[in-house]
Length: 391
Image 1 (cartoon, rainbow, N blue to C red):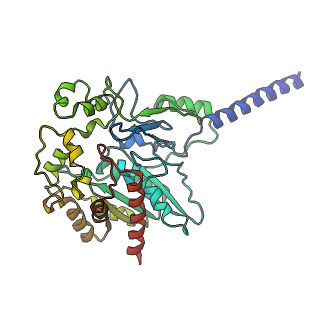
Image 2: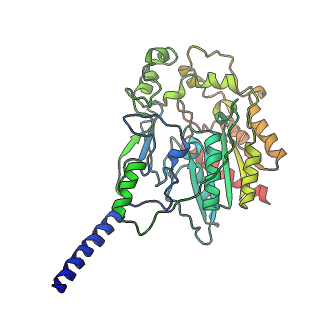
Image 3: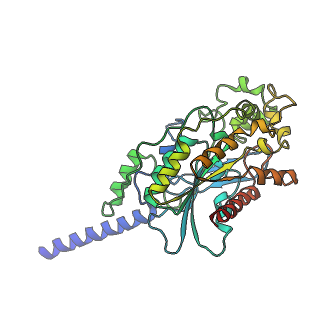
C-alpha cells in the first residue's frame, strides 16, 4: 500500500514538474512585477483593451511616405528593447535613454534607433543601452520613469531627451514617490502567477507571440482621433491624406501640426523644477545626468512645409517660418536652465540644421519622425558630444 501511494505521489509530482517547466518556458515573466509601461502612458479604452500590454508587439506605418511597416518588438515591460536585467553585466557601462517616440524610434527598424546609433558609436566600450522611449508622452511621464528606473537599474548615465513638443504652458509635476520593485516569487507555481497576471495586467502572451497591433487603428476605433470627427477634420487635410489617417495608415494627429507649432514655439515654456529635479535625483544615486534637446524639423528647415501644408489647409499661410530666432525659444530656455543648474546639455538643433541645409533630409515627408539615417546620426552625435564634454 505504501509503495503504491509513493508511486502515485511521484507520478503526480512528475506531472507537476513537467507542467511547471512547460509553463515557465512558454510564459516567461519579467523580474519585476510592478514595472509596466502602462503606468506611464495615457490610454484610451478600445474594446476593453489597453494601448500597451506586456509582450504585445506593435507596428507603425505612414503609407504616403513608404510602403514599409515598422515593427516594434516590445520587452516584458512594454518598451521597444531587449529584456532589462536588474543586475549589471560585468564590464559594461549602463545608460538609459528616456524620451518620446523619437527615442522609441518610430518609422525606423528596431536596430535603427537613437540608442542603436549611440551603442554603435564606440566599438571599444561595451554598453548596455536601455531604450525607454514612449510614444506620445511628455515630461510628467519622463520624470516619473526616471524616478522609478534609476534606483532599480542604477545606470552610469541617463539621457533625458526633450523633443520640441514636450514643452508647453503646463508645468510638469515632480514625482513624490518612486518605484519599490516587487519581484516575482520564484517558488510560486507559474499557473497561479499567470492567473494573477490575467486578472491584473490583462492578457498573457506566450514566448512565441508574433502578433502585431497597430498603434493607431483605423476607424471605427476610439483610439483614432478621427472617430466621429471625420467631417470636422477633413477640411484641414488633403483628401488622400485624410483617407490614410482614417484608415490608420498615417499619423491621425498630424492635422494642423505645423500651425500648432507656430502658435506655441514663440512662447517661453513652463518647465517648473524639471531640470533641478533631474540633477538632484541623479546625484542622489551617483548617476550622470545629460539633457538632450531634439528639435522639431520645422525649427531647422522649411523643406517639409510643402508637406505640412497639406495637413494644415485652413490655417496655413505662406509666410510661416519657424526657423527664425523668435521660434527658437524652447531650446534657449532649456539651455539656460541647464546652465543654471550645471547639467550637461546636448542641443541637436545646429547639427540637424547643418544636415538639412546640405540637402541631407533626415525626416520623412508626411510623418514628422526621422528616417533610420537620422536616428543613427543623432545617436552617434550624442555619444560624440557626451565624450567631448567629459574630457
